[in-house]
Image (cartoon, rainbow, N blue to C red; front, side):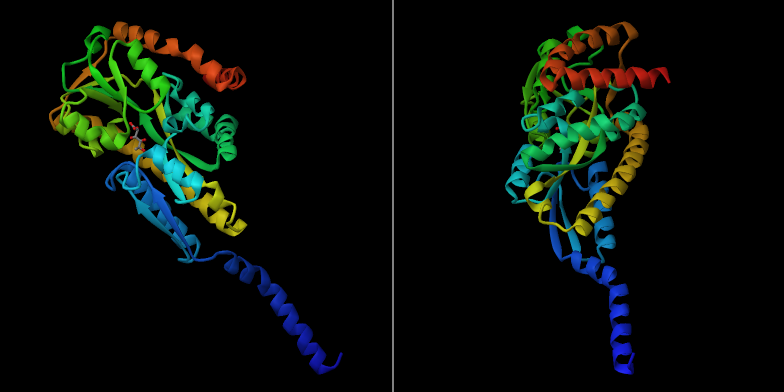
Length: 338
Ligand code: TF8
């Protein structure tokens, strides 16, 4: 080989080695990601979105930037979902419960007392059943990345201490825009009204509604203790959050960009669950210190409430499909026997 030819071959070899690196750098383009969420910046949700944003920026060498927009400034969950579907917004995190109008299978997670522990929730949500439900979003223009923990929900109100079923009679209770929640609380005797979360604080403050139900973390971070006196420990359902992406936008991303988002989402899930559980552990005491009256249900009353609430189960099974319902029940049975 003559020297010139040798130099050309050597240069080509160097270029070939560098190619994958260059290709992946070119595969990541400058992107601005509008990421909406409903709680405020100082909530578990806000902290985890911030964590996600940092991960994305780090992994993309600062090319992909996440603009986190909290406090429902881009609208309540249902409005953001439509913006994602239409491609006007890239990402969001919100309750799976507000997705049921788009993907009926999401109602599986609304089943009262479905999970006995956060550990059970993690296993089912991160396992094949959670994946299957998440995958259903794709036909509807959304890509689900990971589930976060909203948490076990508890009841608050400003009217009276709720220590038995009858205390709920006539209590005007805000629920999420979701039929299972609506039916569940109607069956308990409450006057349940669906309302987006973004309107809830002022509805409680003006007494347009008497009460609501959410995890301790949210009751605290949204300052509901300022407008709610009584808290009953019900743990009536485990609520997941889910990170969703506009499929229209996602399909235009390179595999490298999609990987950045997927990896960051997974890391944010682990961060969020750890942070949420740690906060939940002290939030109840803090709510008490801030003046809320905490009521525990007697075992007999808890059983009565549970019995009433789980009457909606049959209709959830039919709605999400009996195969999915049965698969979930047998997975839980197996888990509990282990
Ligand atoms: C609710 C939910 C909300 C979440 C949040 C806005 O009661 O628990 O806290 O959906 O993402 O609406």
